[in-house]
Length: 265
Image (cartoon, rainbow, N blue to C red; front, side, top):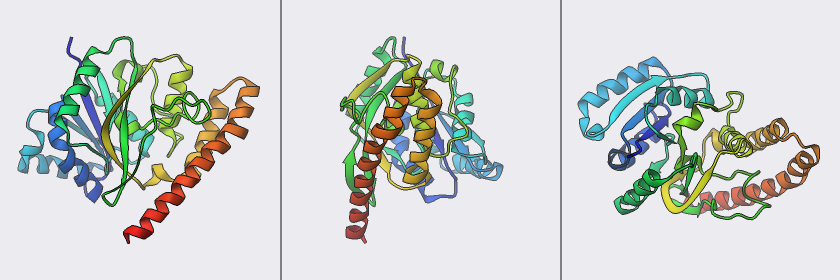
């Protein structure tokens, strides 16, 4: 049976990031998905977006469109978007991020998703960009215990499909503003849901924004580990040792990212 895909995009209609996602992704979305859901900041943005749809129908030729709004944070917005979904698989493509324009790869990805059985989460790769310059790629295929699954959960959410069935049983914790995806994937792993990792790269991730806030993210990662890991010894290792390795890696990447900023100015 053919499995259908829903895309959820969050952000402000009036932002440059939203238009980047829309204009760079619509051709791929129309080939890949059956539904595109938008969650904006307020009702006025929804109304303005509906006028835009009528004026520029080329962006939405072969796809069902739904829109809503939320001003209560990104986690709440994600959950609202999920509630609107009717199809089998869901991908969160936030404003500023966009699909790689490669129809051959999209065809392979659709085939893999359609043929996947007994899998709850399908992880593809992301390329990290700043000002049209590639800074790196997701290392989701690296299974080194010290820096990968199951506890760091360095999964690129903007190129990861989650089944609607899983979301019907578990959603995003709304007390997180940065590491909500980390927390979600951690709980999914602990609960025994099945992950499938693919070598295909699907999306461009634009660095920056609140979700890239290192300080907030690390505090929330620590809180998530303390909340979800019951074994005291394992929890001590993860929060006092393993988390420090994560911090070091993120600091090094952040320093590299700053160096690129200097070169690009």
